[in-house]
Amino acid sequence: MSQNVLHTDQGLARANGIEIAYDTYGDPGAAPLLLIMGLGGQLINWDEAFCVQLVARGYRVIRFDNRDVGLSTKFNEAGVPDINHLNLALERGETIQTPYTLRDMAGDALGVLDALKIQSAHVLGSSMGGRIAHMMAIYHPHRVRTLTSIMSTMGEPGFPPPNPEALSLLLEPAPTDREGYIESSVLSSRVTSGTGFLTDEARVRERAGKAFDRSFNPDGVTRQYAALMSAGTSKHDLKSLMVPTLIIHGSEDPLIPAEVAVDMASTIPEATLLIIEGMGHSVMDIPQIWPQILDAFTRHAA
Image (tube, rainbow, N blue to C red; front, side, top):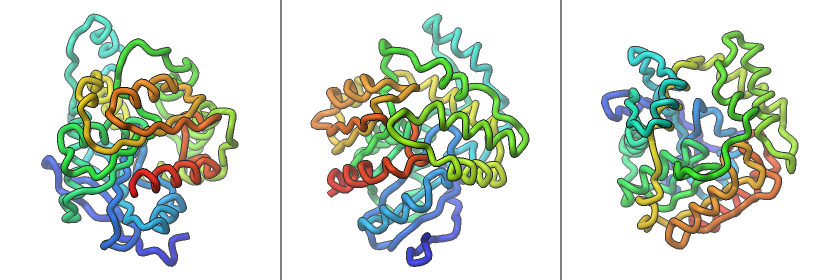
């Protein structure tokens, strides 16, 4: 797929005293685009074909493993947070302590740009990756040319809760055997994908197998989730954001209702909103969605 596209071998960026694994697609002189994956996702979760299509539109695509997943530094010495305990503390209005924060993870992303000597980039984040991208835009706006937030949230309370089945699949421990992990990934994709598009289950199986073989670290996913829980709301900060922002969301997202995206678009000055009918909480597993996202991003970044 990428035989005619320059694809660098994996590098390691030093950031925040840790190492972040990354790779790139495309001409180093093209406009840089940093992709930030969501909870538990490795850089390979950004489908190669999707990256190649972005390169064809004039971008240098940069993928990386968030801390605690893939080949980036793991925080195993921090132990495994008790999610139920953290939930109870939040319900009591307490401030919770976690091994690291989303703002720390935004610093990791900036470290990747620093390693590549990139002063500023277009930034596109998916789900939790969208919240990390928000942190970059809030605290380091000069490093973010444009912000694209897909299937994400500001952490604002008061919206309908996630679909219980989808949430349970997100939170239940991943099977520790390869086949079980693959089947769990397929089931999760079915539940989260929405009714408007067919999931490419062969693609899901292939990606899940590669992810399991590359790095299986479920405790790291739990620590990432704890960081997400501790993030609170970013609505106040986003009200004054001056980075050009595109918000993309599915009308049938079972984890984050579309009303959240509408509220975010009304909060961020001059934000553009695209609601994709029939889309759930899944993008990479459904290539039929890509043209709408690629077209919207290209118009926005231009």
